[in-house]
Length: 212
Image 1 (cartoon, rainbow, N blue to C red):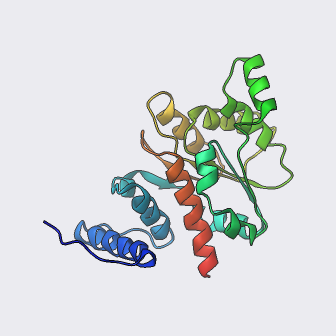
Image 2: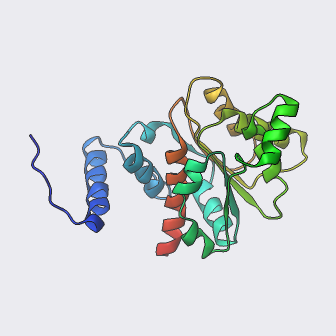
């Protein structure tokens, strides 16, 4: 049986990352340097080392996402849980805000009228923002599908997509569709993901910039 470690609150996260690094080393997993802290933070959030195999980055994804944040890009998410989890105060230092339109009355009305999901309509609302937008999708595959449709018809182009919805219905194909576009992305292949993962990826990017 493992011995209890008596740590102060500020020491717990540091110790967690030490354990993650040790386990990665024991598994002989070497993460690309640019992606390392993002993947580690996702593991820290989920305690799931499968993300080392399934978390997928487009070319120069981390560099592109960081540049967008530095230049004041906004983040749009598909759940209030992710909205709550993203460090808004630190993002604001770079001029960015986090939005979630899921509880918007207009979104609810349009979704009902058109017989579609609020997540899908939320993507359309986000396209009206006057700034580059990073999408952090952790719950609704319909959000990714709508983004794919918008990209394909050429009406608007998101700046970046974090596509990590969790579930069983249309989840895997929605992620694959995003990876077929020319929009930079971080996507988790397969069924795993969630709002906490979407927030973790955003925070990893923000915290890395805060340290530099």
